[in-house]
Length: 138
Image (cartoon, rainbow, N blue to C red; front, side):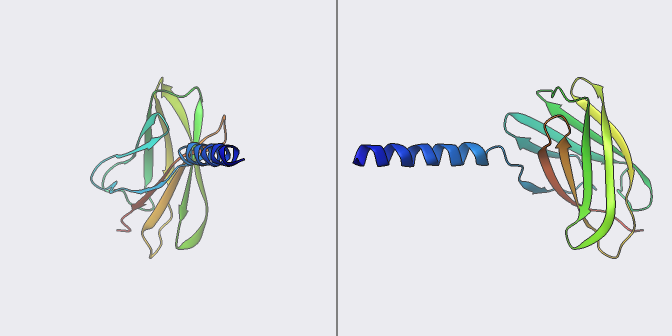
């Protein structure tokens, strides 16, 4: 009985840790200076917004690189403000090369400057990254 309980505990811990490894963690980045690098499982994700400085009310280019490449032809980037609701601000980014995606967005102006970009693989509906960043309003 004791060995059965030990085995059950080990299995629960293994399943719990393996499931946790597949959950995207929030990462805070300074996109005003450089691209953001995050990891999701075996994938390295590089997320960037251009032009710099990243400002509200201007067209921004979303650039995402994923290594090793995904099969997905497009991703969804859902932009939200953690501190208040700013409506829906979503952009589909399309694969332009094997491991590169690109799209456009205009983020609204607000007194607050903290945004979150959630990168979602549309083929699997999994969140790959949650990136916190600040934008400039002027």
